[in-house]
Structure formats: C-alpha cells, structure tokens
Amino acid sequence: MGRQPRTDADRVHDRIAVLRAERRVSRRELADGVGVHPQTIGYLERGEYSPSLALALRIARFFDLPVEAVFSLDPLPAIGSELLRRNP
Amino acid sequence: MTTTQSSLVRTFEDERYAWTRTRTTRHRAVLAQAALFTVLVAGTLVAASTEEGWTTPYFVLWTAGMLLFIPLHSLLNLGIRGVFDRARPSLDEHQQRMREHSHARVGWPASALTLLAWSGGVLLAAGTGHTALALCLGALLWFVAGLLPYWHLAWTLPDEEDAEADEALPA
Image 1 (tube, chains in turn brown, purple):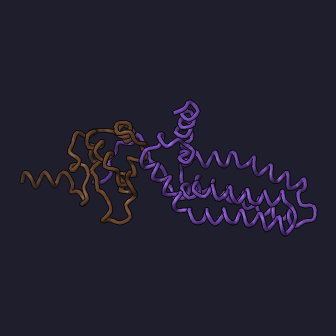
Image 2: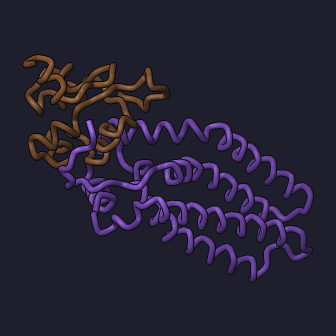
Image 3: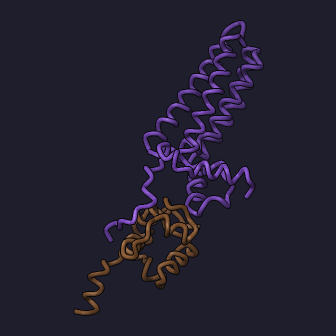
C-alpha cells in the first residue's frame, strides 16, 4: 500500500496531470482504468499521496509508458525542456 | 460483495450527495455531533445529581438525542464516503490508508475515553446509586470513543475535486 509523504525527500513526483491533459483523459477514466477512486488520482497529482508499486505500474501501463517516465524520486522536468535538451 | 454492501457503496458514491463532501459541511457535521454528545453527557450528569435520577425529561432528552444522531451520522458518513463502514475490498489503497491513518491518530484519545467510560460509569453508580444513568454515561463516552476516527477524517479531508476534470495541473 502507498502512503502520505512526510517530507519532500519522501515524495514521489509524477507526470500524471500532464499525461492526462495530453491524452485528454479525465480523472474518472484514468481511475476506472487503474482500479482506484477518482479522488485518489487527485491526491496523486497534488503529491499528497505516494502510490504503491502495483498502482504506479498500473498507471504507467495505462499510459503505455515505462514507470520511470511517469514517476520519479526527483522533481520531473517539463516535457518541453526535455525535448529541447534532446533536440537542440 | 453482498447485495446490501453494494447498495451501501452505491449510496456513498452517489453524486446526489456531493454537497455533503465539502470541508464546510463535514466540519459542521462534526461540530453538531460533538455538541449533541456534550449535551447528552451534561444532561446525564445533571440528572444523576438529582434525587429522582431517571426522569421523564431525561428520557425525552435521551430519545431526542438518539433520533437526532441518525441523520447527523448519515450526513457525516456521506461526507467521508462511508470509508469506516464499507467492506475493505470496496475501498482503494488510498481510502484504506486514510481509514488506518485516522484510526492511528485518535488511538490514545479513544483509549482514554474508553477508560473514562468504564471508570466514569462505575464512579457515577457508586456515588449516586443511579445505575441506569451510569450505564447511559458509560455508553455515551464509549460511543464517542468509537466516533473519534470519523471526526478526525471528516475534519482533515480537503474539498473534493471534479472527477470529470481533464485539465492538467502545472508540471
């Protein structure tokens, strides 16, 4: 089971909100797809809850991405700046 | 999941009751329940301080209090989506975590209230001889001990967000 992060170092960062916007997926659709309550998606996006490994893997599979592309222990850079770095 | 359980879950997830899931409504429900139990405990102590003990006005107060508790607790339970009353499989990992967190946070106060329920009841019976009122006092305090996790969760939960939202938060 996941947990509420107690410190910044404890926090799991994610790109769920960005990916949802990009794919035009609502919280409810994502929640139904990964088997959680829609409010739980909101907690994940706001960084108020760190998911279990199983939930993180299900979310990554929903977006058809490797888990490290969706979740990170370090703050995730904006996708635009990552693209610029790869294609200067 | 049983039919009863699934209908209970459907009720707690019904969007017609979305108005109960705001922070303000939850806080009001907690304060109303706390006020109700304060009045009932005070009424019990006042009744126990008299010669008659169990009187008709006290019986009316007790009955009215118990009847008022039903809609108040329904309101509170709808506000927290009934996470304490639903079967575990109907909750996701975050809801289970919230339930356990609230239980853990009120562990000591709940234990102290349970102890107070027993000791207060015994002391009241021994001091006044009103056994029925002593039982009522013990039951009320024991009831409050059981309600503490509900109050903690209802008090600490933020306002809910729109589940249909597809707008993104800043990355």
